[in-house]
Amino acid sequence: MTTTLACARVRVLLEAYVDGDLAVTDMKSARAVREHLVGCADCRRQHEQAVSLPFRMRALRSPAPPESLIASVISSIAPAPTASRSAWGLLVPEAILGAFILWYLSGIDGLTALTSGAWTDLQRLAFWGSGGSPLPSIPVADVLLLSAFIALTALAAYHLSVLARLEQSGTHQLREHRRA
Image (tube, rainbow, N blue to C red):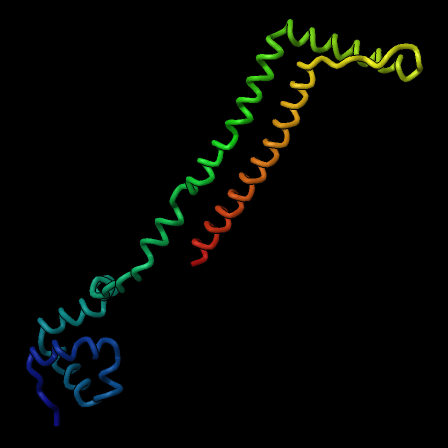
């Protein structure tokens, strides 16, 4: 004995029928849906739509993204931390000392005078070592210039080490954000 189903009931069972679940759970209802589809053009058309892949894909809903997704995407594409950019301001003292040294040298004439003075001092030092002349005197300005150069080198080395640490911690933090 076959059970006759109404169109409304077939439409309710149609998804389970198409998925194959109805044949597993209720063989009698699956047979009744199949017999109904043979005789009903409207339900058959809905069945054809239901078995078509594009129709089934449109019926699927996307899951909601996790709350942390937007924040992690934004943090992974965000520009580098501003702390390392502002740390370049630490190099201002080096610029000031460099400007002082350039001012002291005062162009080509200053550089020529410094070079010839250094050459003369080296010659006197060589002759002093052989006992032929007294120890050369060092001008105060040269001592000041040498002190400024040593301070500039030490300060630049310190600031570059700070920048390197900031760069490493910024890169490490960026990697951690990308892993999360």
